[in-house]
Image (cartoon, rainbow, N blue to C red):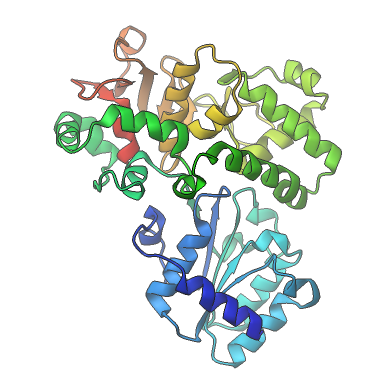
Length: 398
């Protein structure tokens, strides 16, 4: 235990507070059991360490541990947490929980036994808590940490510190908002930088190896996280890599399940299950048509890579690439707060209300002319007009 305490102190001491992800202010930290999900590389560990440092400092009452530590190959989490509690500990930050086989059962038992012990845990976005052995879905407050917004990228890179806006503010007041922002920065080239190499916080330390690190992250998700969470074998993991490669060169992929099944050599049911797993792991996004039923057995209408950095890293087919980048960015930023569907008349149906067409600066309204609450998100524009809004401005929603 002493070694884990030293490790926690070391990690906290090296944690900076100068840049904080949006989620740290959205979490209700008074809850007894908090789960933080998100893709690898988006900053879950840093967020937990920042909270520990801000709220508890060097207090022995709070501790950060990661469950892929070799200590937990020979020792139970429950026993460790019990000793921690008996020695005055009251807050546990548990990282990489999916790497420990019995994490859900033991966290549930700790939650039920010690009513003044707080537990914050993080793990892969592919976790399905409702399927976990301990069924934490009814006990835990679960949050998802999205990739960096364009606004967060500007702040982390030191280019600008600009507040976020609600979607309603953007829709009703975009001209004034865009005018204020463009007085501070030359927005279009910075937006292009962000789309290529600004989605993950590790861009700060990659130094020309951003895509190499991103590819390594993808491999870890497939070869480690999904193998553990989905209980798949290495042969299926290879099929997953093949599936991602096919989708990367076809996005946005208008789904034909039979054709895709033949291409990658998987049955329909297995293919749909793996598409759902890749979606939860934030490698792809399965977008269904407005009005379609929920559930993984309902095939998606279109499949996108989850964000523009993945698209730049994996796509080798550059036909209509700029249009795909635009749609991928818009979808990714909207998914943080809204349900995103494909639309019968536009590109996307957002939050059950708004229809959006995404395109270049010359995009017209013909396709959505008779649709209520419809807008164009237009690329390569600093300022919009009417219901035509600069695409980059949707990067300021969080």
